[in-house]
Length: 255
Ligand SMILES: [Zn+2]
Picture 1 (cartoon, rainbow, N blue to C red):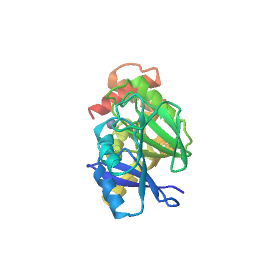
Picture 2 (picture 1 turned 60 degrees about the vertical axis):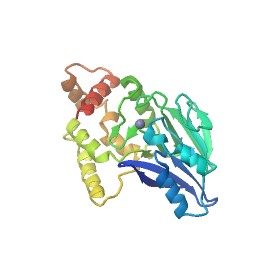
Picture 3 (picture 1 turned 45 degrees about the horizontal axis):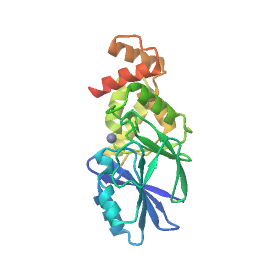
């Protein structure tokens, strides 16, 4: 059984650590900084880093790849269409990779970056900076249409899927979610839960898709009240989910 835990990095990143106790091999997702991973390996002798999964090319996701690669024998997986340092395996949409005995499906989810990929294995999703808890990544390279479609694709995975995104942004994302849906009781409840966790210094991840569908405005573009808010913001009749998404994303950029 693979165990998943978080190695905090920078101010609000998590490097996800996957451990297979039966082989003492481990893998990391998006090591923006080698330091926390090397420190963990040093503190846990006998464990071997065998795989590094990368979702996209931003420095806070790939900055640790080269130092980790030279310190270990790890194999580096990353999106084929982005420049990923020391990449061994270039991944395309619908590829499948086996890491620590787990088969991961690879989905391209453009929007935050154009080549961004996500990794999915039976109820476990590593989605980088695409879907966040109660939010989504900024559109640095892609269009609102692309990001909306990417989020819809992830939202179609089983409802109990655990969402392992890269950043601890949940608390501030929920402030925006409440501005979009002030009367949503699930959001109010989640705000209380998240505030408690953060007050104790605990992380708010992983999330799960069922909770995201109830509380994440970017997955709720089909809700009448969300569309109305989006229409108010950009002063037009947003007819498609992608248009509602675009209005929300533009609002959130300045929120
Ligand atoms: Zn990013």
